[in-house]
Image 1: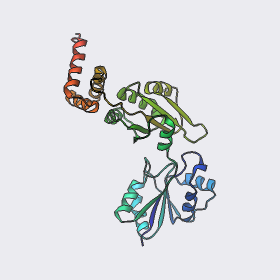
Image 2: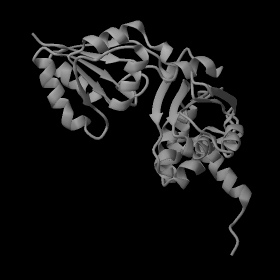
Image 3: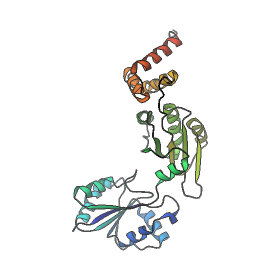
Image 4: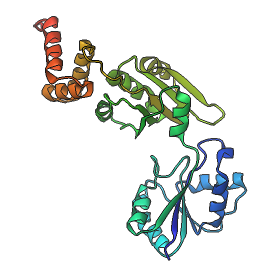
Amino acid sequence: MSGTLVLAGTPIGDVSDAPPRLARELAEADVVAAEDTRRLRRLTQALGVEVTGRIVSYFEGNEAARTPELADALAGGARVLLVTDAGMPSVSDPGYRLVAAAVERGIGVTAVPGPSAVLTALAVSGLPVDRFCFEGFLPRKAGERLSRLRECAGERRTLVYFEAPHRLTAALAAMAEVFGAGRRAAVCRELTKTYEEVRRGTLEELAAWAEEGVRGEITVVVEGAPAPEPGDVDAAELVRRVAVREAAGERRKEAIAAVAREAGIPKREVFDAVVAAKNARGPAGP
């Protein structure tokens, strides 16, 4: 008989948020695959649990190499428990490869539900939560970051991002550039921990606030794009969006088509706005 892969959600801050079933699964697993074995020890000590199974490390650096070994253990009948540093495995954490390998072999996969930074941030953000999409971490490089944000410029669902504290200012500034300075957002810092903070405001306001320096684990929640109203499309905003795309390397024709698609209007309307703005500026000086 094949075993079972158990994905276990772990606390994102307050250890008392750990689900009761987590302690039982830790104690009974044949193999515990942990993103950080030191953090696993701290968690088990806090929960008063003794792990009797084999403990192996399973993190970004060895995930690809270790997945076949764990898949073989599952195929041999082992109950393998996968835990990451915080939250749910596979969600911006190691786990997807092992889940895919287990599914491919017909091995059962289940989960111990637990705290989630994504859902917690959404719930406290004050922004609409009926429809949302999770975008994970933005690329580190400025050009790639802008390209990724441009893909979401017309997204009407609430957006959720993870971000490193030292890149937060640049990320918020890029969001303000692509989404518009007045778009509402919330920066959620150190959720469920001692210094938990939720800062709400426009992207422009939050970018200015972040320049003072922000520490801790960050989740950013951004309001979705407003639905376009027929005959109520701001020409200056269309021109700005085209300019952002051109600055990132897109050809004008492609940029105009993309902006028109996002705004739900004919390409000709965007083209006319760009031409009118160019004519208003007049010929370039010598």
